Length: 283
Image (cartoon, rainbow, N blue to C red):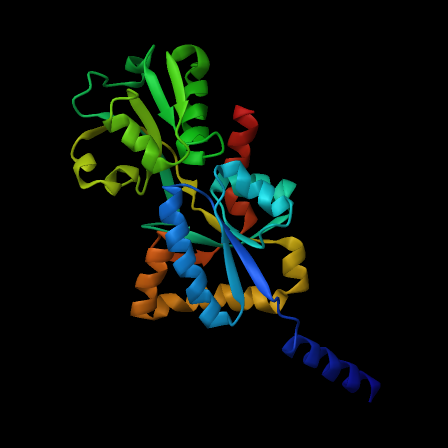
């Protein structure tokens, strides 16, 4: 009898688990921050109606700011880049839930020059100006840096100037405004048929790709571990709300608009082991 009572009590606790008064969701500033804030705000309003909980948005000025925000418990959930997730897992106890999916579960880093450029190879970049996204961007810095190091190239000595532009859109713009000779940005596929340059229709026809990286695991959605422990049911409700959106044609389009990806899939921490290895290699 006592066992039955305890089982029933446990069941009631699960069914009526505590629900947060509000949540704060962070977004890595991979593109124009103002555009991200607008899209993220729309996303927050949609989730508020679905989950009946107030949702606030946080967009930092740089990649590292998202890790710091979770470590300081200023955000509960966050869409991280592959690299910032690995750091957030260590420094902020981030727990991976889902990952974005574009054409596949992976994306790539692309080293890009203008089609009119005389630069046709990595070797042709010596003493040239190069643009990167952020030191905490996998496709916009870490992967190309690893490639250069494997070739025996020390970027700080090889290039005449290294610039960081904060997001992919600003980085590709710098190339087309002739501020740099080459840039490293994301590619959606292994052939470089689409990527950061597609933000402007004129860019796609006017670029040459010098190099494409190995596959990079897609950007994950994470939750702060102590939030998950306090609100496990709510966390799963949010996860499956996002997953269920993919079964509704209208909501699927909204999801694509909100997160900038075709869909979301379940993710595990081990899927980001290649990024951890590169972090060790590039120090």
